[in-house]
Length: 248
Image (cartoon, rainbow, N blue to C red; front, side, top):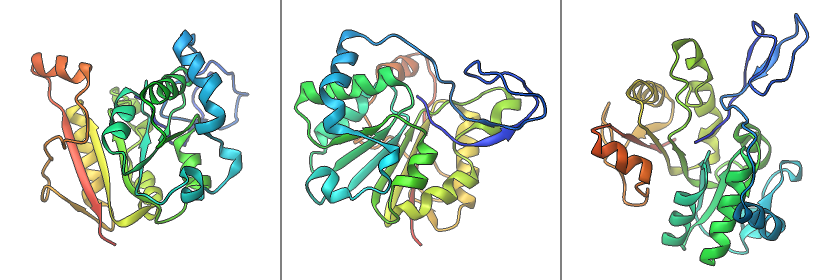
């Protein structure tokens, strides 16, 4: 799955998306690589038929959640939902909640919209943008009941670890967006990243580990088990879930 955060590095002259940078100039590094892929017929249909109804734009600024969904309900915010299959499944299973997804890859956005339309869902909205900018510009403080970051890019090479999404600066940005009592739910299949997540969240101000100090949580029922995860379990691969509650 994909996600986003900003940092800087001026050692390379070509970005992950192939854009050149003038020597001596600093550039942004994002924790995703923007892969350009073809849209399937279903993904294109999702964009064509549903974006105007359910797509959200960074330029529109701060959201009025009740107006956006046409009702008052707890808001779940997912960063980097991939093809959106699990997000659509959760929205169908938790119809009493409103769901906002953020995904940088357009085929994934089209896929989510097509899935939501096919399932007759009306409680899903999405951005096709950088999650950090969406949080800064569009999400009001105290408006989220749950934040989900499932299987973010692990940037497994040590020199790339700084590009990982779950870092203290990002959690500082995220905390005020949650209601007191709201949950951050993280999941990864990279043990080293799980350890980093635990270190960051345990040190973060205003959060308590629901499983107890330095403990991982069992997968909650609301997080669907993906085909990828089922295959990993058969092969003996681990998955680590962390649930931290905002307490202040």
